[in-house]
Image: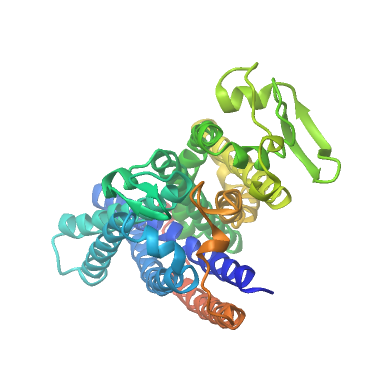
Amino acid sequence: MDDLVAARLQMAISLGWHIVFACIGMTMPVLMAFSEWKWLRTGKQVYIDVAKAWSKGVAIFFAVGAVSGTVLSFELGLLFPGFMKHAGAIIGMPFSWEGTAFFVEAIALGIFLYGWDRLNKWAHWLSGVVVGISGVMSGIFVVSANAWMNSPAGFTWQNGKAINIDPVAAMFNDAWFSQALHMTLAAFVATSFAVAGVHAFLLLKNRTNAFHRTAVRIALSFGAVAAFLQPISGDISAKDIAERQPAKLAALEALYHTSQPADLIIGGIPNNETQEVDYAIHIPAMLSFLAHGDFDAKVTGLDKFPEAERPPVLVTHFAFQIMVACGFLLAFAGLLYFIFSARWQAVLEKKWWLTFIACLTPLGFIAVEAGWTVTEVGRQPWIIYGVMKTEDAVSPIPGLQFSFYMITGIYLLLTLILIWLMRRQIATVPTYYPSARNINE
C-alpha cells in the first residue's frame, strides 16, 4: 500500500464513519423537538417519554460525532497539505460557519438536556428547535465545502496559485444547492428509517408497547416524506453533474461511448476491456432525458476524456446502482406508509409490516455511504475538479500506512463503545403502558 492509497483509505474510513453521525445530528434533534411539540399540543405522556429517550441518544451521538469530526479536520491538513495550502483560504468561510453552528448546537443541546422541569415548557421546546436548525445548517455548510471541490469557484488559478479569492462565491458555488438538498434529504431518510426500524424491531417483541409504536410512526412520517422527495433532488443533481462533471456522469452510468440518444443502464457489470456493460438492462434514450431533459440529447461518454482523467468505472457504477436501488426501495416503503395511514391503518400494526420496516434499518445509511462514494470516487483523479489532482495534494511524509491502521483501530473501538452505550440506553426506555387508551395512542 503506497502513501496515496493509505491517505485516501484513511479519509474514506474517517468520512464514512463520521457521515453516519452527521446524518443523525441533522435529523434526530428535529424528531426529538417534534415529539416534544406533540406533547405540548396533546398532553399525552408517551410523546414526552419519546422526546426524553431520543434526547439521550442525541447526546451520545453528538459526543462521538464531535470526536470524529475533529479528527477529520486535522486529517485534511495532515494527509493532504497540498490541498489545504491552496484551498484553506478559499473554503474557510463554510468551515467557520460550520464551527459556529456546531457551538450553537452544543449550547442549545446542553440547555435542552438540563432544562427539563427548569424552563418554561415552550422555551425548553424552543431550545430543541435551535438544536435541530443548527444541526441541519452545520451539515449544509460542510456540504458546501465539498461542493466547491466538485465545482471550484471564487478564485483565479494562476501559475499554480489561487488569486482574486472571493469566499462568498466559493461557498455558494454552482454545486452547493443540489448537493446540500440531496444530502439533507438523504440524512432524514437514512436516520428516520433507521430509527423506525429499531423501534419496529423492539415493537415486535412487545406488541402492546405504545412507546415504540409512537416512535415508529413519528420516524416514518419524516422518513416517508424525505424518501418521496429524494428522487426529485436526485434528478436535480443528475442534471447538474451532466453539465459540470460529464466524466463523473459517464462513470456512474458506465457510458463508455458518447451517445445520441443515450440509454439508461440498470445494473450490469462494466467491462473496461470491451468497454461494454454486461448483463445490464437498457432503457432507450432515458439517460438523455434524465441528464438533459431531451430524449434526443447527446450524452458525453468516457471516450471523450484521456484515460488518466477517467474516474474508476467499476466502483462508481456499482456505488451509484446501490444508492439508487436503496433509495427507490425506501421511497416505495414511504409510499406504502402514506397509503396505509390514509386507508388501512390496521396494516401498520401487522407483524409483516413491522418486520419489513425493521429490515430497512441499515438501508438508508448504505445509500448514504454509496452516494458519498459516487461523489468522491467519481471526482477522481481530481481533489479540486479540473484544478488539482489528488496525487499532487497528498502529504510527502512517508509512513501514512501506520496512521491508517491506527485510525481504523480507534474507530473500531469507538464503534464497540457506541454499541454498548446505545444498548444500555435502549434498555431504559419504557416497556409497557398499562392503560388500553395509552396503548392505542
